Length: 103
Image 1 (cartoon, rainbow, N blue to C red):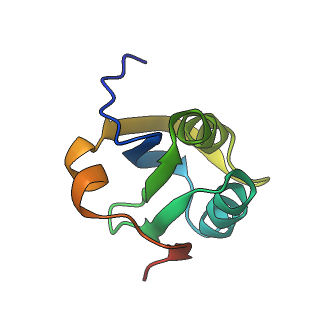
Image 2 (tube, rainbow, N blue to C red; image 1 turned 90 degrees about the horizontal axis):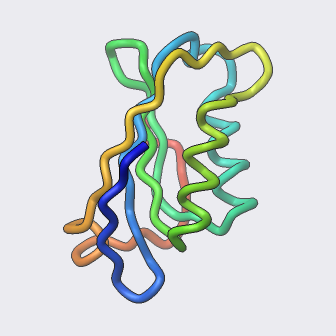
């Protein structure tokens, strides 16, 4: 995965879209647990096309680990693809205080 990362201090932001059997299997709750474990802020939500979208803000190394964990998913999921888009403008303008499920 080729990444162009823009950092402010030690913070980066990424949009992560996960495809496969990722809805109805606890994927959003899994993402919250991973984010809490890694100290990542942002959000996760189901998309109408069946994918799950995560916006992750945190230390570059932590966000990279989050991306790897999204490839695994929780038990019962089957991840077929993970698309990552780095969000340098979000680092500048938006820094959430926690990680939450957005409906």
